[in-house]
Image 1 (tube, rainbow over the protein chains, first blue to last red):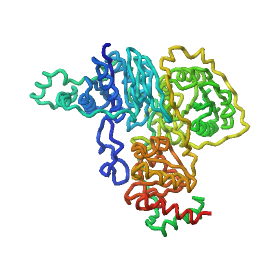
Image 2 (image 1 turned 90 degrees about the horizontal axis):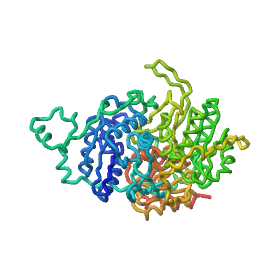
Image 3 (image 1 turned 180 degrees about the horizontal axis):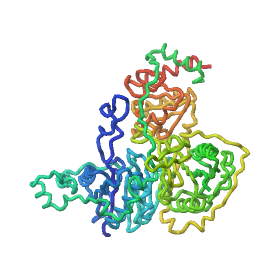
Image 4 (image 1 turned 60 degrees about the vertical axis):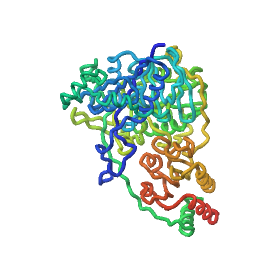
Length: 291
Length: 339
């Protein structure tokens, strides 16, 4: 059986999980610029599922597609280091300010441009927006079925795929027909680490915009190795209706943003001894907090 | 036309709690807007759904009842809702932020090119001014939700596109009966005329879904454990304390990931939201993602070996020490002093 054509939708996100002291401003709010930019965790789970399919089905090709600013090319490199085959960076000012609908519109147009795929796989949600909307919206725009909350791709035989889903109170195994879109949960297998050989091979991979300050020596090396070229798609490369991009293509608008401030309360410190603990318990019984 | 719709999830013939909570909120918003509250139920054997939702103030219940719809599937459910919304043109549509709602919501909103805001923690009606376009919008739905891992709260609006869609997690809104004698009109959806064979291209082979065993959200007292509890064995102390106080046991994501407690007990941004009378946090550091699920508790006690744990800042009482030491003392003190 010939290999599968898989595209992994990945996003570069600020690491919102580890907001350490350095990322907190004096007023108790988060300094977003200080957060490290990482490969969205659930997209790594998705990449692992794609890599496992590639292991099982020889001749399969994995393409990383990411939409973001120029530095998001790092995400494609990260995917290549782990075993992906090529990547596209969808980048343009015109995409800025996109909500999930405008984002999924741009991504679906990019996918149509790049070619036919058997499986489009993404993490369930990103740790900055936390919406879990782009996967299903891309599926709808491409007219493809979707399987969300996927924990494991059990098997692919010809055009038939079997996927295990992790739901709130159990599992559900579903059967579908390719092509389709899958979103993967964080409970799925962790992504394999970087492969030393691939890392060496792709460490000089660059997209066109990243070559601004390249030295002559670098350009000689770069041009002699076609696999180092990361494809870039701007708004002119995809067949889009500009009204559906960016802010104008976003039905949802941010009206206001409030920083969450760690509000300290007047808290009573109870010593770790029988007497003080008993006093606390008696007080709680008295004010009917406990029976 | 232009009413407020709530999608009702059905679990074993019962309307899910999250949907009843949304009906409660929906009723209040609909009254404020001067429009009707309409509900949608899709599944099989739905004859008693009307009697379950009517008391929550539902004016019209749309039912799509068919054997093939017994369990949620993306395409047929989406087709039914798109057909219904195209005919009824709702101004607002609400869904629970569950594995169903988060699969269905985006699919519907993409098809209708309307805006969807996920995991809202608050929904209010208000006005909005678009200064650039020189437009004022009245009575929009403010969709308020945390983002950036919980570090910011954003207010989102959909000025132009309809319906304004939002998903809300279970336990965020309160559930409250509106009027036990409220009359609800039933409209049956002709499923076969809307759904096609192609909608069943994805099918369910097997399901192992457990019935809800634990009702943490209803518990007035929650004894919750974090990674600091240290082991599944140590968690037994929390169960002992909960039993004595008449409460339930919860857990932070770190404790669940470490295998100390079941996923169903997870409290926090990616778990459930609780607002008990008393929340006893044992060995929980209190990261923002956890606090998001419990900071509405009336009273908070923190037991932690780290005096600088963020949880201590929101606790009413904090005890610095080990739970293996402190919980037995609490149990002894309670047994001695309770009636």
